[in-house]
Length: 106
Image (cartoon, rainbow, N blue to C red; front, side, top):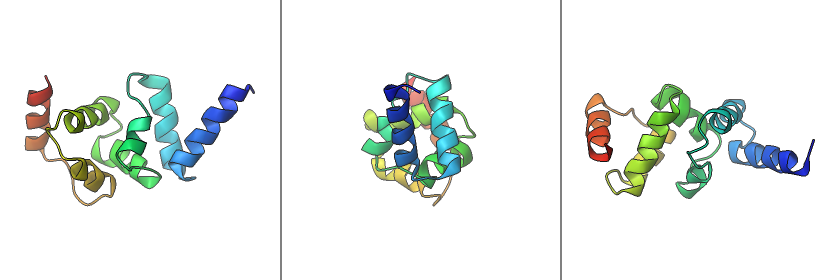
């Protein structure tokens, strides 16, 4: 194993806070969708089970939806608190929200 791979694994475990679902989500992200920057989770204060909840429960394991949420926050269409609520499993993204976010970013 190279030093870089060891550093990547350490970063993954740290971000995931040891949560197996979050580790799976991050590894899947790194393998499938390099355009989403993993650091966005850290920027928005999302770690551990929050990563898994956002990816699996709120976005149906669809990284395009996660990226759409990140873009909506970056562009000011969605407050950062909303994405944090979603990651904390407080509620779901409504179909109307998905439509609005998609329309604003498209």
